[in-house]
Structure formats: C-alpha cells, structure tokens
Length: 155
Image (cartoon, rainbow, N blue to C red):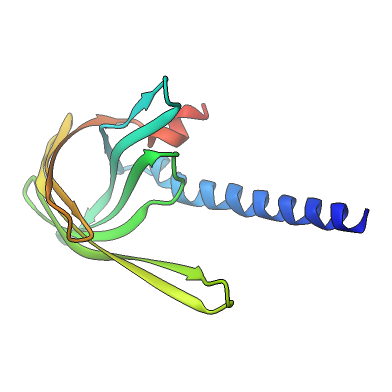
C-alpha cells in the first residue's frame, strides 16, 4: 500500500513537471512576432510524428532566439534553444544546444549538441539546410504554420 501511494505521488509529480515544461516550451507559439515553420507529418500506420519545426522569435539587433523541434517518432515538448543571426531574409545559426541530465549515479551531465542552420524565409516558407551533431547537412523546406505540432494537436 505504501509503495503504491509513493508511486502515485511520484507519477503525479512527474506529470505536473511535464505539463509545466510543455506550457513553458510551447508558450512561444502564441507570442506576437513568433514565426513557426514546419515540415512535420503524422504517420498514421506507425503512429509516429516525424520532421522539424523552427520557431523564430522577434528579431532584435539582427539576432533571433530560436527553438528547433526535432520529431523522430515521439513528439517532444522540448525544443533546442539556439541563437541566430539575421541578414535581410537570411538566417544563419551556428550554435550549441545544451541539455542538463542526471546520470544514474546522481551526477549532473551536460550533453551538448552542435547545430547549424542556414537559409532564407518569407511569410510562407523557410528553405535551407539543417545540420545536427556534425551529421550531413540536410536540405529542408518548411512551411509557415500557426503553432508547433504538439501545441496545435492539443486544440
């Protein structure tokens, strides 16, 4: 009984953290000035979500804060936080996304993932290349959407 109660409390705490993380990460989709570009697709046969989403914040002094969402099966609420430079309608990102994890020993682990993005955008699309973790650059065409996939799918 005690173990069941403890498990229920832990589950509730984890659910609360997940929900607060989801709201924090996806709230940018409703901020004025945020532009979201996506090529995300739902594969019904497999139940998978695949693709990329790029959420560009307001441009301030030629700099832009960016959230990059990478979907490889399971939707994620956590975007990679990056900073890019804007010249006209050209975006260049050469940044590192850091994720803080806790190892099995309880020790903090910082996982760094280099990300390079370059391309052009307008009100309808973003076209360019994305390179994650020194992999091969991949050509992408992302269309403008109102919200990130996970946020839009909850409406």
